[in-house]
Image (cartoon, rainbow, N blue to C red; front, side, top):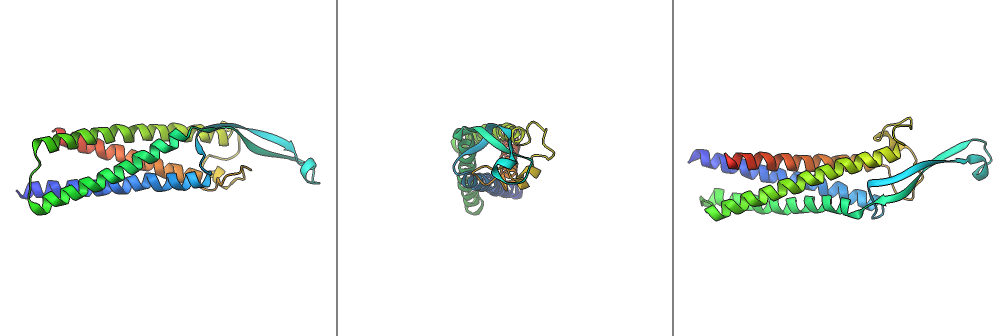
Length: 199
């Protein structure tokens, strides 16, 4: 009986971690969406254009700036945000249910256990898909920002470089990297939880 309580307590802790990881996706994605004025940086395409600076100022030289040809599809950012919100709600509901069972000393029915496993598998695939989407989308945006690594700075350093866009790019790499860590954590958490339930 003591072992069952410990396992139940471990599941409560995992659901709390799921809520935290979900928030680690939702908050950075919301901040990034606000900084980019509702546009999605993931999978955006563009090129660097060099203009003659003497036309704009009286100093000779060249000034280069990023030109975005096409912003990424909003669905890419919205899907990751949806996965984050869903896992926060799912983790909170499962955590409350787990605490209820812990204090009430009730057991799961077979049907309830089946639904929990089924939902965990769904969240596993959703968070895995969001993780892949964020990784590929961020890589695409980084290729655009660094001009396929032709610029003298990395993607992380480009946050401090003026890109001369009408959006705030001062923290895009930090926000999208945090969201990526959140989705990977969710996928790992649900993978390990699913494997422990199936044994």
